[in-house]
Length: 315
Image 1 (cartoon, rainbow, N blue to C red):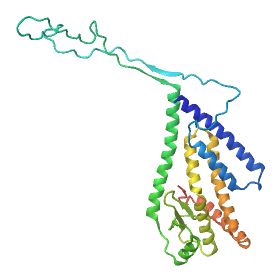
Image 2 (image 1 turned 90 degrees about the vertical axis):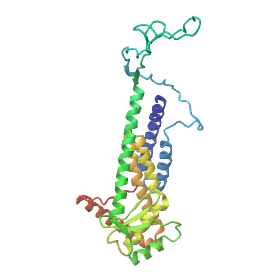
Image 3 (image 1 turned 60 degrees about the vertical axis):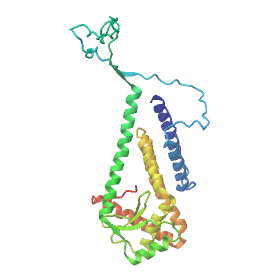
Image 4 (image 1 turned 135 degrees about the vertical axis):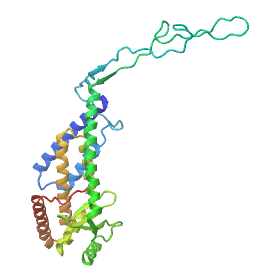
């Protein structure tokens, strides 16, 4: 356990340094490196942080200063008191073993083992246990990781139940015609459903993605831009990157920079998606797409102020 915790701490410390470097590069080189390249950097970093084990196949550089690992301190040690001996075998008279029956000539009786606790046979002693610092820290880390994953799993299951109960398949011919035109070429287009409590279109689901639209759905160019935005998320596999960042955050929950990275992944995936949509649109439509995005953000802000978050979850 101590080796695992040391590997985890070293990996988290190295990942934190990379996170700070990427955030600084993002601020110092605005406009030079797009959010798409930052998403690739986040994906590579998350892939490494997702496996909290040392990789012997990779060359391990030797540090100029070697710091020995600290000894695993014992926090608590329990030694049970001397217990009473277990009950002995049945005896003929109190304190003596029952004689064995003999036939014919007198034979010497077979030796009978002495009951535990008597001379010649040591009494069984219950084993104690110790609680070391490494074991306590491992239990604390495991409880935090399981708690974060369990919390998100419960939220995901609640969202799936809400989606099954309160959403319905989209049946508007205009919306379906626009959707079929945009999904031309996709082998398995995601299902299209509507929900009355939704503030903005969203993509949900890892194995079986679904695009949810507000009810009533937007019309005209706003509908096309919304569908194009969510389908771009699907093609870029952004939902998988967010799930990977969630896993890394659960493993390294004790490092605050991992939570900063999760927010940066959320922000950069949206920026990269918008950048991809803008590059795919003709120049005369890029301004309209930007206004549609601003209108969606304003609608979501009003929803949050009214206490309706629209069940916006991606996973």
